[in-house]
Image 1 (cartoon, helix red, strand yellow):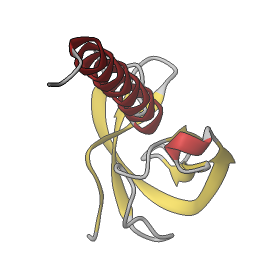
Image 2 (cartoon, rainbow, N blue to C red):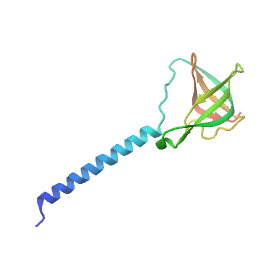
Image 3 (spheres, one colour):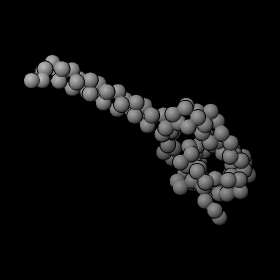
Image 4 (cartoon, one colour):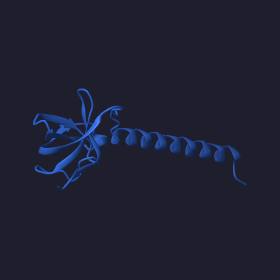
Length: 115
């Protein structure tokens, strides 16, 4: 006959392992997804990608995240922080959708495109 205390210990161990795995998965998801401030009021502009660089980030986010140097329609040049999902196919010379509010510029949806 099976020892009931051993079965309870096994269930407790499985619950703790599952909770730990869930916690690690949640931390990974939060580190991977880069939640930036979404400008509520802004205008959509199209910029030209001049350079695609990288900046250091957490290891769970891939180690580096992109930073775009773009030329805005008023011929000003700005650096825009982004995620790889936003700019996965950006190369210099391509166009990128941007959202410009008072002093901030963020990558809009769908990101880079060919003109």
